[in-house]
Length: 401
Image 1: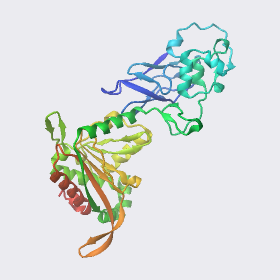
Image 2: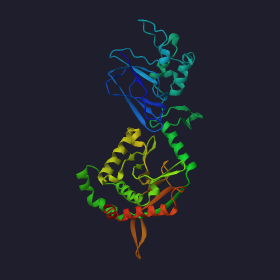
Image 3: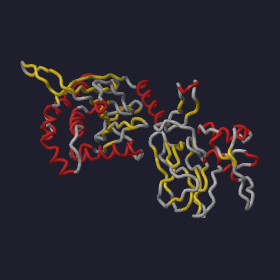
């Protein structure tokens, strides 16, 4: 019995996907619920799992190819079935019974005499004719041969398919943008074109937070099974400020201002594929430990490409920590339709005036980018001061002040 592998529904806004990679190859044995193929949308990377055990007998959409929701990606056959890498369009052609096709090493001439589909696929995959074993009539190369061939070397970190090398000697390489990267670019540019973005800055003394971490980090991790980081403090400080300045937690929809009485905090996470912002739902009812666990879980899932659309959807306010990469100061861009984003930065010892004395303190610059259409300067500055107060005097967070 043959089982079809099709593109599932991945969300209302997702109509097309790109095949990032086939985890299983033609002829591989597959167990039920084992990952078969990795699909990339403009939001997430999603693995597709086998609904039954068998052998991967056919791939109809190669790596780098696109397909609509519901489209056929490949087929699973019963154990012992003959595998074929021929796409669906070619599968309808007559197959010679009983006699296996002759297999020869392809030449450039053999590839040129092959059909346009095979040549196009070889170009897209960067396959050299010398690496292709031809199984077609008169030494012609089929699409299945190309799919089974070893591609030319490419950087291990590159997910997209190289489409051309612009100059001899490999000085340039053109890589097709991934769907995620294109979506990030569209959203960021849309934010700049739509919102009236301003940024206000402040600095915060991290002395007390560092002292609390040093005092309680071992006991906190032993009790809760998670490390005590900075993010939970900043989330709690931001929540207190959002409750006082509700415009920062609001958004614009058409000609209406939408004020939210819930607090879903997006936490920006950098990955090799691009920036993603998973959302900590109802963060105001979570403890420090619950916030740290959720952020840690999202970080691991982001690195593994396991975040779901639901985990990336929504959000009323975002926090981005560029300090983990060494950034000293930056102006973060809004995450539409949100109206504000808080940027954290590197903690660095600097001389500051405390009373009438100059002391060396661990300081961090904070940045709040905001949409001036909905948030006034007074509100933005006040919000950032409230965050600063909460971090410098953590007892305020514990007493909800």
